[in-house]
Length: 624
Image (tube, rainbow, N blue to C red; front, side, top):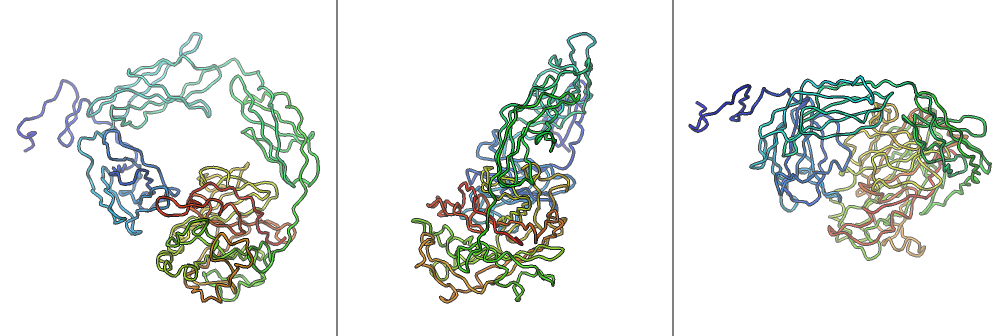
């Protein structure tokens, strides 16, 4: 018998809902779409990211989503995730500084509903309390506002009156949030009543409205049904203003244009860009890159704005830009640092991708050689050789009619530089980590993007030299996924665009394998990162007895069709490789930006691993 501990239950006049010992006014609300998982993180780290996926689904981009303080439960951070049809959330945590809590790489699992996670001490696995939440917290959202309706006034000026049925809540509804969308514009209004008069609508514009309820604990209901109201107009005959402040940045084969956005009585739909009298493209943003240009040549540009009614502005003022002189690649030597000791090699027999060099990768395929031991663990006064090194040393390239083949080498020479720390440094080699690796590929001279597709490097420009990548392929060092390939569109790497320009490695036909060991025939470098510019300090680590089982060798096969079928012999492509959870830790070819921040963090890791880097070194060329 359920008698509320012999206190009984009381129901008010009208509709009432009883659920699990609670009585609330009104009818039951409509079910929320998808299953929801709520995780309360009992604070261990001050800054906490949760890296998650619906069980069996797709992971969030590392390092995951920042967890926010729960104002209703001091000492806890909180996140609620819609896992769709899944019944559990798989997750791990990190502090934003390369320190992970992943339950010994087994991850943690949380059921639908409320869950508490208590971190362990001294990096021990934490404790998951399924079906529990902090005492006294209100996590019940109001019911969804029902029967949203809208009415357009008949007089002038035009207004829209919205009405809806009241929501119910276990404690009480605080207010309602109205969302209004018009084209690309989204606005919100908050009211306490169940009606709202919108007096700011414009003629010739279509509006879409939705309402959701909020309680005092900041729990939001799902959105109501959507109402569309079209406000008729007399016809738009007003053209946008002319673009102003047109500026251009030239390379040897491109001009990147930017200008001040135009204004319009309704909205600017886009821009037409002219080189001389010829239209060379359109853009929905105040920026455009003109490619395929001749070097050391003047080009004159104008820009026009247009709106949805096909009204065109006057042309902007003319801008003349002269392209730069092209870069001449001088082949490097057989010792580091070296860029393009060769330009790779066309092969007649396809290369088998298995993570080992069985003789197919030869020195005449090397396109970059980096200094072993130049990683920032020994930069300046640093001596953090207990950390796993991120030390790249060799990059090979080959191609045939169908594929681009790449191979690269990570080395760990701690066994020679500091044998006392060799065990710690080699305890978790890069092949056992999920460290992001990025292969940047330049296929169109003068085009490409400057920012990482996942906004790494603090969402600051990552590439800033004459070579910019047109394709970016990201993979984890332990290959727990097949990677992601993005093609730059108007200078930006898109993500999650339905497989048009952003694809998984599997969907793009890319194969990557790795194994412990070496692919190189020689390994030259330094014992201290501060000695890279002193030829007398260069040593042969193989001659010193370096154990290559500490190293990791990678191979990749990329369809040329996935890269736009570049002309390898006559034009060639450029490649740069780096890795890093935040900013690059090392690059091939070498870029000095990866060793310009000495010092160590509070966790005794090099500060270089979490600084902001701008890579300006030329890419290694393949083919030509």
